[in-house]
Image 1 (cartoon, rainbow, N blue to C red):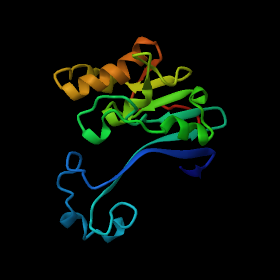
Image 2 (image 1 turned 135 degrees about the horizontal axis):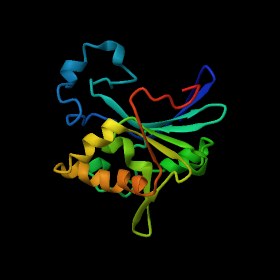
Image 3 (image 1 turned 60 degrees about the vertical axis):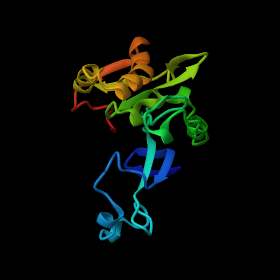
Length: 188
C-alpha cells in the first residue's frame, strides 16, 4: 500500500498483483532489448534484465465527503484467458480494509474503462452467484464505453468479464452512466 496527498485528496494504492516479465499480451514490442536503453525506467518499472514490472491495482481517492475506488482490478474466482489471472485468490478486500477502507465504506466506484483487469472486484462470488462487492456505491461507467462493450459479445474473454463483473452491478441498479467530462465531486 502506498499513500500520498494531492491537495485535499488522499490517494491510497491497493495492489492486487505485481508481475515482472510476461507482458507480451499487453506490450508485445517492449522486449528487454527494446526497454533496456530507457535507463530511467529502472528500478521501479523494469528489472536489471529489462523485464517490465507491471502492477494491477486500484486507487482509493478520499475527499472530505467521498471514498472513491478507481478501477476494480481482476477479482477473485473469475475465469480469465490469462492463466496468471484466472481463479485468483488474493487478499485484495482484506488489504483494502487494512488500509482503512472496508468495502461498505466505498461510496463510488469509478470504472475508467471496462477491460477485465479494471472491473473484477465490482462483484464477488457469494453462494455461486456474482453479487456487487461495493453494494453501497454508485458505479460510474462511461455511457460510450458501455455502449461499445455491449456490442462486443463475440469476444469470449470480454463476454465472460462483462457477465460476471459488469452486468450484475447493472442489474442491481448501481450504475450511473456518465459522459467523458463527468466531474465526480468538487475535489475530483
